Image 1: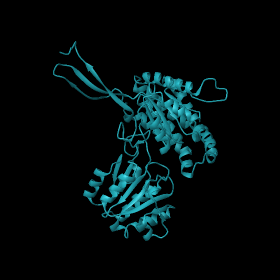
Image 2: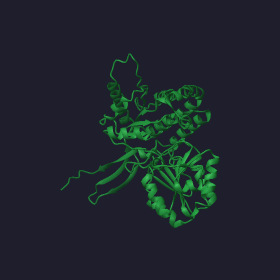
Image 3: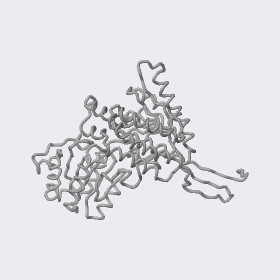
Image 4: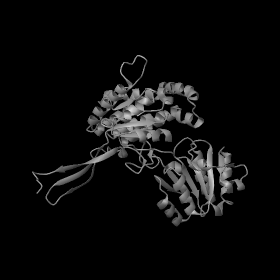
Length: 430
């Protein structure tokens, strides 16, 4: 597992040829991974966790190079926060790997089975997708999560992370590969694209005979490019314009707690609340307390005219604000006539990621959950809970806003498909 793509001025082969070679290695590895015992994969994962923990100082040093270069790439505070590694976050990475190892191996699981009247036995069995091309933002922890999830689910992965995290990701992948060599993980199972040349992504996206699925995770521009160029299926992770709707039957303190946690617990992640909707009947009673709590946390409010009339310090919002994924200390706020207007607003302007209602009315909660078209619809809890770990699903490679092939947190099981195994005893069709 020592193959990585690194471009230098002396590179003899073309970029396209090197991308092709990586994909070929991954495809070969995927065939072997599909039959690799779960015990081997788990032993590899557990040693990876241990090796990463024991390399904490080296990883922090590599990460410091990325942090130092971050301003030259134009990263904002939220992006730098996602990029930074500490001893605590590295311990968290190791913990996440161990949690993946502890999950049941999905490969070979019989989803269902039956015997036909003629005695023919039919089983529907879970199998890997094959080779995953994963393009993602500058978060080195995602490098490890993706490698662990893909191999656990029997898939080879080609990682194309953001250039801003290249020093961190390169070291982490090197550690993973070295441990893999000791455990018989096939060469090519985990590879990192180390060139910053954007053309490399285009080359990989044409290799549909070798790559089974592309998973882009990042800005809308990246995802739209991948969708447009990819010849293989794409599992998309679009914007996280997540909403909280405060209903007329909301508890005031619960509304404050849920909104503040949804927005402020961590700004730069996809399940952060970016838009707040408030029923007009509680605009004068609940909204002032919520707004005060947000402003105390340094959050700028961009409101519609009704909100601006209530709070003169509010910035007047625009159509762009209703659609925005800020990933910053900004939130859009609108007052709506009723729950139907809230649902319509969310389905029009939201990104189908995560949306929540705060209410004491069961019928309102059920209506909201039934009619809001998002990967997770939450009642009386923070949007930050739409996360693989928080939902009991384990680490994830992303949160899909698609409806096919996977929706919501994409973990080990979501990176599998199935095939039918049919057994007869000389059966012939009449």
